[in-house]
Length: 292
Ligand SMILES: O=C(O)CCC(=O)C(=O)O
Image 1 (tube, helix red, strand yellow):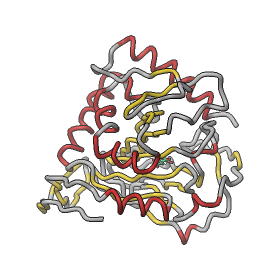
Image 2 (image 1 turned 120 degrees about the horizontal axis):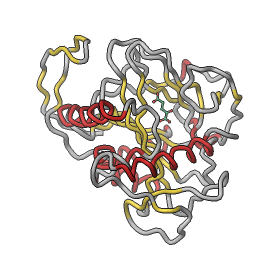
Image 3 (image 1 turned 90 degrees about the vertical axis):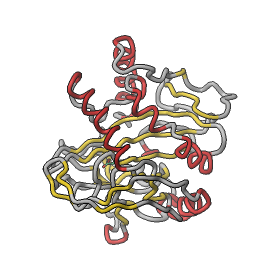
Image 4 (image 1 turned 90 degrees about the horizontal axis):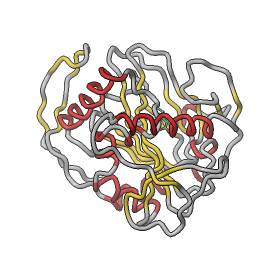
């Protein structure tokens, strides 16, 4: 992968931690061939710079401004229907160009959510495959995870098992664990941790992963919030098998199937009618993803 950044080393105190910040002030176009081949072989591609760290800080501020009004944003589904910043981020041309290389020219945006581990938070994510709980009919799906704060081993970044997307669906056990972010506590047992690759990301960097790639993440042992913006994209022939209705939004190309109701992206922040609708969409998402 060839990235050329203008790198300026500055030392700064950010969110209570002393970081030796490598300030990324410009972003070049990523090498789509390299990303597509890394993704094909490993089931994920990382790290990919999408934003400068200054732009990432601005989007983090947009999130935290909204949190100051309506409370914590962690794991609220379909958040792009109430806030403009996440919608803008997940529809960046670079994001859609990468998604197009992976699932083709017709792209539905299924869900967008922030996944936030607070400072010194024991929350974690067990080993799992995403496609085992969404009820989606096919695996023409890809997830984006964009860091809006440092995602390091210490702060609980994701780790992936390279190549695990090639071996089908694994048995998941429902394990009660209040600190597991996953709705069902679903866990694949006996994963070889030593073959895992950590996806450490700086603010503005992203990873893309396949819905069958085994992945997990540890607690946040750092003194800052770990903030990821997570989104799922589908090819339009995919349909929902666990519920009689579900929604998505066409963000590129055409949808000849109409398998989903249409989501409406936020054009302003925190519009009351959009908040009411998002609550309905969130509850339905929890019903679908939270049951086997
Ligand atoms: O944010 C995390 O730590 C885990 C996210 C995850 O499991 C996913 O994006 O599929």
